[in-house]
Each structure stands twice: as C-alpha cells, then as structure tokens.
Length: 156
Image (cartoon, rainbow, N blue to C red; front, side, top):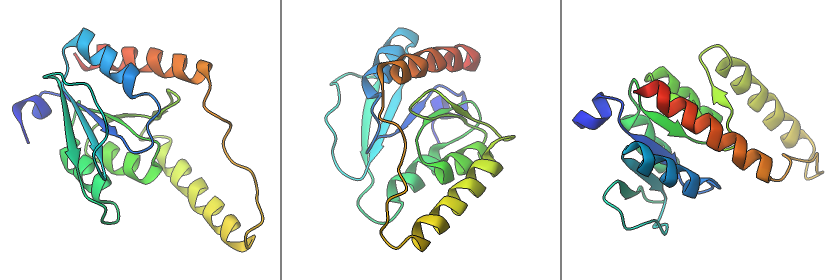
C-alpha cells in the first residue's frame, strides 16, 4: 500500500465496463488525485502522470481482487459490481456506482440480498428475459460527475 493510498489520495476504477472514465480523469486532474484504472486487459487511457493502468489478467475476479486489495479508508472506488463494492466498503473506501449512487454500509446488505434474489429469479426463468437496467443517459453522466466531485471534496 502506498502513502497515497494510506492518505486517501487514490481513485480506483473498475474499468472493464465503466462508462464514466473520462469524467473521472477530468475530476482527478482538477483535484490532482492519482487514478488507478484496473481491468482484465489493456484499456486505452490518457498518457498522464496521474493515471496508471493495472492489467489484472483474466482469472475470475482478478480485477476485483486487485481493487479490493488497494481499497483503504479514504480511497474512492468506482464500480458497478455490488459484491466488489461490499468488499471495498469493508476496507473503508468511499464507493460510487457509474450513475453517481453511493454504496454505503447502511445500504450494501440490502443491495447484496437483492442481487442474490435477482440471480435466483434469472436462473429459474430458463432463458426468458426479465428486462434489465435502463440505458446509461446524459442525466446519469451528470449525476455521476456531481457525486464524484462531492465525494472527492469530502476526502480532502
């Protein structure tokens, strides 16, 4: 764990399916906070001293494991993965989803339970669709940017 991580000066991105990477980079530049983009394989990213890319490999949950290991009090994690969010919260991180929603110690238990119920329902439907999340919108992008800015101000 680096001094930056111990001091809460790190943004960790679960990068494989993150639609708000550019917003994170912009905010990180403004606040001069390092960003660690973690993914199974290489993702294009800005050539900037604040941005590092970690290729975790394609083993099951490899990227999640890298992120969870780096999570610490004060770090900010951006992920849509509820189980990873739970691990990061347990480590003391602030965790946001891609739409700007904050995972919290008070809400994560219910979110994990809902995820499990939905997985059971999907498994029982034997290929029948039950719908999914709404498409990512401009309003979602804006909500994320606002939530990110607020979260980073609180980390200082």
